[in-house]
Image (cartoon, rainbow, N blue to C red; front, side, top):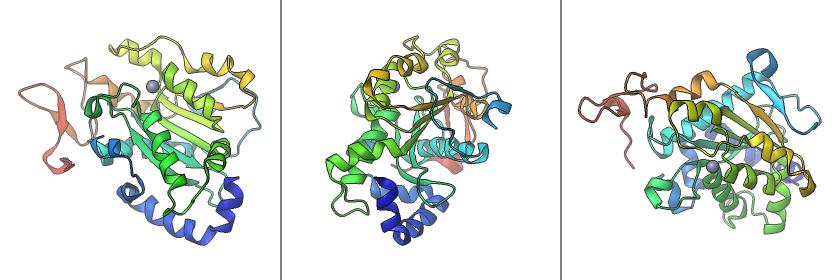
Length: 261
Ligand SMILES: [Zn+2]
């Protein structure tokens, strides 16, 4: 579905994506939900492919890492360079004519800013993409039925392994792929409260849905792990562009990277 639509509007998409890729902050005008505003061969590099035997998508590790870094950048743009809950997501169309892929929307964990416990980064992004894809004034203008079909063309990149709630939502949507950095196992080891159920198990148990989602794990984890390491370890190094606050001991943006929301 999206491949046909993207072909029909190739010129506008290419122009838009060029701007977006250079200036990630320019995504914000596409994001209409209030929650947003308060809110990179894999095998050779330690990443593994789990679950269902989908046809191999010829996407380079460099491209995977690029989008994982964009999921991190989503945190910078929506929250801060070092939010406590550093769960950022970007949803990408890899079926477009652009080799790199086209970003559809971003999202970041918005629980603390909204009180909504379901607004993990992945859910926030799914909500945002739904709004972007159906926006009658946007570039896609899809009907609900077309959006439901469109998920099967999209890839979700997220800084940490989807929890059971998000993994289930991803499978209900029928995403083409799900790519994550830091694992649930690592989060728990670092001190995070997590439901100890790997997303691979959710994926393996969802064949009856009639869709397949390829799962790529540990992608660029060496870069995403530091975003989750400092919260429960006072000796851990802060993420890039952040430093320890001498009073509270938390990681805060350096003076040059404070975010005005
Ligand atoms: Zn989740």
